Length: 289
Image (cartoon, rainbow, N blue to C red; front, side, top):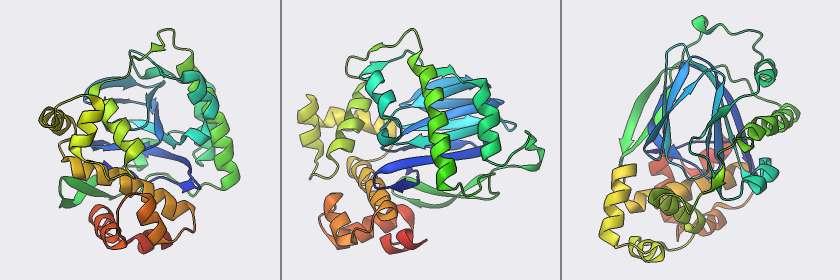
């Protein structure tokens, strides 16, 4: 499992990328929501160990704290949006606790040309583009990746990014229009665990405390978590803490000592060690890159 970098500023997260034939096979999660908008080809998305087929012209919504990965056809072309609650507050308000039997929904066709234009792509021609990922290092079940061939992702100016966020609202409206939306009833066990850890990662969490809060025996909860995430409890908690730290490092001028405390690391020494374990760089190097 790995964590995914995102653009952020004062807790405001939005990242949009255009990909050609890229599979992300290792489960990852983040505090923000994600939409994958398939333009050509098809992808298979695993969300909390449930596989979903997403053909061209469709979108898939991945809510916060959902463990997910995806595999695509070599000719697949798609846009990935990662966005925080602040980017679409009205969507999250209207959605509430409702869920759908499937995270797949229709994508507005008029948005495709708009997004491609903003990415500087006049037409789809995947023959000149490819994206290959290969492992660099393994650390406690975490695998870091590096792009061998860069995708078509120019730096997006802030004003253009705001326009993209506005266009995202029309995409999200497609999910709210799904006729089978209904109250979710609390979600699956893994969803409840990940949501709880995400909301309390700044605290001194233990497996026993989480199990007691959710009403399960610790050994049973540990086995279920291992089955879905393939990592230990402490590593999972630290993954949430590191992601929160990334957002604060990228989006604020807060000192690293304060970030270490806010994110629940206990000490600056622990923060530096764990952050480097996950990212291969120090917090200062991450901030200044």
